[in-house]
Length: 168
Length: 168
Length: 168
Image (tube, rainbow over the protein chains, first blue to last red):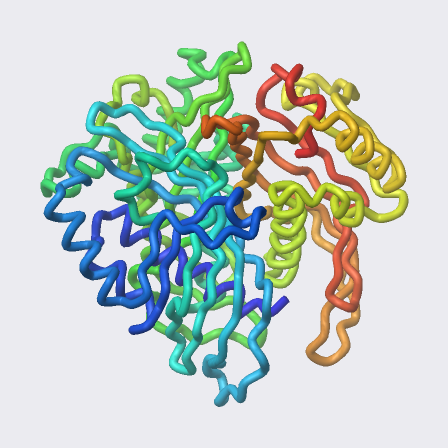
């Protein structure tokens, strides 16, 4: 376990979730590399080795299009989301990289992070909306930044119809 | 990102939530400075720039009065709460402060932390009771301690009637 | 607060919960020492000083037997669980131990960690299934590993009938 790696992935995902929960969707694509991939699938699909995705985007530009579509559809009106995330597990560590004195290391790593998402309706009704884990491929740069090369959202539930509109 | 700052805010909020969840309410005011402020509001109020508070206390003494009132009202009988908090996001870092060798730095910072709170009734019924985020102004001292100069609880829901009695 | 201790307990519990949530129950006993103890009780029992346990196992072998029984009963078919854990509070620190240059320290410590567990049914129904805290006695070794000498799951609810089959 590398304390810095864990902290940087936790910070990246906390900022990512904060952007969604605060309805700053326009910031959402910026957590990805230019050619970053975003995918939503289910644990059942993963267990069966199925490549099916509920949603798939292969670039930051596609994510921007998605945000535009979401804004036009006004699906967020009167709803709020709240993510709470667990501690990241580093599943494939970054190879060691030279760190300049006191600075950050660059590199790549893979991490898994559990999440729960609540949905809060305009009426005040609060429900546990989605649970699952993020399987992230993260690129760290030496200036302390981090972005997703790939983010796969693995949902515990296979009931997905109402999820289609939602960035998770 | 400063790993020590993140860890100290996470620790402060974990101890704060633990005191509430274990019904050690008398310890609750001690997480604040003498003139520390505590406020509960809603995301809707914040978005509209409204200064409305569901609850407001401007000192540790006011929080102590509140605990006394809660004990007299016996509102906790037969209920338990459980907080789960996310990773803190440092939204305004502390200016650098001299750290004695191996010791802690002092200073001030602001942080945002997502939370979910469950309520467990005497019957065993468990519900997702409140979600939101803490907007904290934290004062760190050089001996490793930390207290809230201000803690604002921003609720995702605007449905607040039953919340009035609850420290969050 | 010792940043390394907090991070190591958080990592141990994150891996522990990941094994359960991914239905890798066979890995569950390996998070305990050979003579490690596992206990599920309720906050009510703890508050009343009652030694009652909902479940008790006094060795890794007993936990292995339990996994076998769970597999034979097929209780997991069509259900998934999702843990989200808070930041660990170190309630009894490890005595200082010599650390070789840049390496990990050994020792023992006690920690408390809040949790929420969701249950996701085959139909997609998701519910907040259990909340509570882990009271852990953790043994750290100098190679970076960590295991439970004792893990007590303290449930907030006293309603426990359906819980009997579940590793938490």
